[in-house]
Image 1 (cartoon, rainbow, N blue to C red):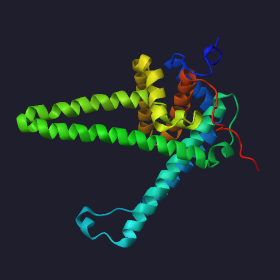
Image 2: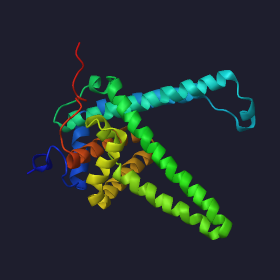
Image 3: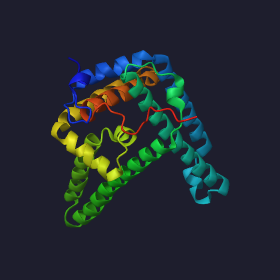
Image 4: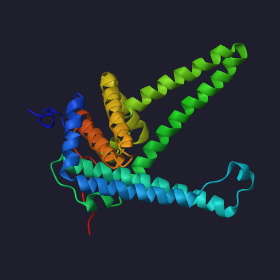
Length: 257
């Protein structure tokens, strides 16, 4: 019996890493050229955003012109929008493929402002949480250094452990935001409640996905065009195992004409 038949659609099931990888690859294989083509398109657009931003020479940082500032701001905003659009598109395509369908390019490229806002909002709050951990570590480290230089490193070691813990139990932040529609705090709590009991297994999944990315990087970098969608498909397959296979926000629903 397959995992999809065993899992509770509302979530709470056990993560099986090998099955998630197999399901992720099978989903990618349903429309490999579409996945690769969309990933390439997203990469090109991200590159264009970097060109718009330009580079500010450190020696000239004190005399940044208005034009340079506008380029940086516009390029940064466009870069964030491309990231939200591409992440949403890949997860939508992965979900469609995991449902047994063969996603077309239109499945990926459709803009969903509401979904993108949920993704941005939750990611922003999680980023702030990460930042707070680092700031607290820095402040404690400075205070500890007044007592003993050797003690200054301890807060950063603790912060590193906390960040690893958070990164793992928030592994499915994007999927939760897009497919469950929970707010930032509820999303963080949902991730902790279901992933903490199997934290080690989720860490293993993250390491496997890192290995896939590394192989793609070593394959003349072009391999990332395959590695990135395979990782998103694998991660989404794992999400379905743990959180359920129901689209609670209508992410796959085509907008009314």
